[in-house]
Length: 427
Image (tube, rainbow, N blue to C red; front, side):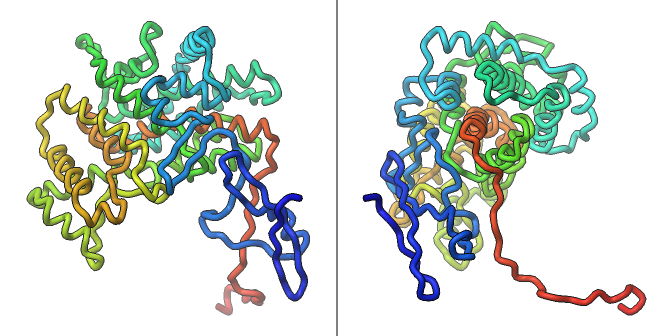
């Protein structure tokens, strides 16, 4: 007999089924609650609410576990690459060599962006934030691809995936080129996806650009680590927008806007802003560590701990080595990065931080890498979006394939119950 949860209201007992996931997560299915009782649940921020069944990503914050389609993030970061992980997330299985080659080649078919898109990007002032530009350009792709995706056609879905993967990388880098006043670059089909990111960003017409393989490897890992993270703010936004049967580009654009917030994708930008604050104020790391420990001081160390992981962020363990490799390879002398290394050492050794599991997280290390590569802080969230793209696509595809109903949360009304209209000349 299946497990049941009982709820007693006004002397009457109601029974609700308990559902269990493949990783032994349990949930009380209250989908009939309002029909049976007239009540709804109140769960601000949906911290205790399961909104969907998903087979894409499993996350256990208490144990520090992150898996994509059953594969641990550690194994994927060590053995795989970003496009292979993208295929895994979106289509549900690791590709064969032939499937992966076809996937990469098919993405290349769609990397040209309509020249009229330049008119849109030219309309933005130089002061525009790259994430605002990216959200707008992603949404604008709908105008150049007006035909809605037939989600029941495997061919149409595959084509939409390749088109999104190809064009998004190009327009994401265009936001940087716009900000810098550089001419816009185009995809080079002789190079890999991550290599193309580097040259799309940094290659100038005045000379050749040399791509460092250590840097490419570090970025590849970063993109893998950011590729999906269960039902976070931007991902659930993509799903709920898509549940209205909005198209893929429109749904991804909504995800970009959600990611932009400083409590979500802007965290690695906040890390660098904190490091800059410490530098400007004399660079005394010990002083700021004491401020962080003082519960009455508003200062907070950014990039330490995680709202989901109650242990060490598994992604941080992986990217720490990549950050060390990049800094060693590039041999950069930067007071900001020196401060970051001092903070890292303190957090890994100080009992105050260790006892509270306030370890450096993936945002801390990703910010260090981006800084070392010369990527400006307001581009950090764009970097996050490039990595998160396959996860958004996978979640949108799963939601549409599962024929999920349109998202429609309930509320508890707290406003006036009855007011009488007063004519304007009597107010």
